[in-house]
Amino acid sequence: MNLDSLSLFVDATRLGSFAAVARERNADPSAVSRTIAGLEAELGARLFNRTTRSMSLTEAGERFHARVAHLTEELNHAREEARSTRAAPAGLLRMTASVAFGQAMIVPLLGKFRKRYPNIRIELQLTDANIDLVAERIDLAVRLAPSYRADLVGTRLIPTRYRAVASPSWIERSGGIARPEELANRRCLLFSLPEFRERWKFRRDDRVTEVPVDGDIVMSSALAIRTAALAGLGPALLADWLIGGDLAAGDLVDLLPEHEAAATSFDTAAWLLYPSRSHLPAKVRAAIDFFRGRIVAGATPAP
Image (cartoon, rainbow, N blue to C red):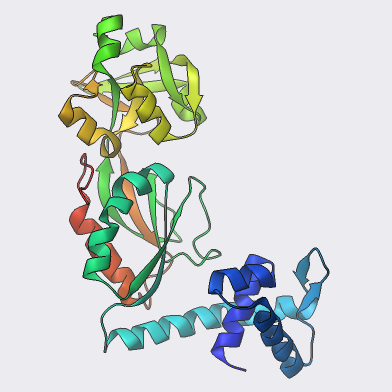
């Protein structure tokens, strides 16, 4: 019984099929099946119930997984830590970020990251789903929120500020707005999350104004909302990290520059999160230091 076969068993449990394990590892599915069969023979117990359409753990498999999942993670961390003492950061770095933040802030920096750390391979999952970092074996995540869960370890990457913006062409047609309340009578571009599509908040001199908003265009992508705002389709509430370049170029205009804007909280940030502080691999520490040093609030990084 070796670490590689145990790790493959844990991956098969996570992914739910040998074919998925083979695709992720770029291996032959028959080799995956043989490894599991060899492990079952060594243990003298069947680990998976397998049919042509599904696969699930047996009772013995569930008990075995409960014992070895944490063990394989610790052994992998120990191996990474030992290697990092004698070599540059290396290995596969599994990252996740929201679609908009990833495309706007992470992807433009990948060229510099690869040049700085040529031995690190990156698997970047861009999703707006709040995935389980441990279950999905994510090394590093970027989350946008006022804070983060207590079972994760995090460091603030940049503060996040929202602005109510529109294109110069929309302002010319509509006459713009002078007070937050006027947005209630305009067709706004709305993000599909309930807290973004129902009301926007504005604060000035500690006075908070909540404005009910409505519109005939609702989208699930901040990138799509930005594109629609640039096209003059209406006002939008967007994060500064996404529109910093547009504001500087004059392609979008802050409609209420003397107000702070928000959908949920005025104190939000982008956080770098990872599952555990112990045995932090060199590749994760390198990525944390790299992105913290190059991502600047309110500005889209240049490649």
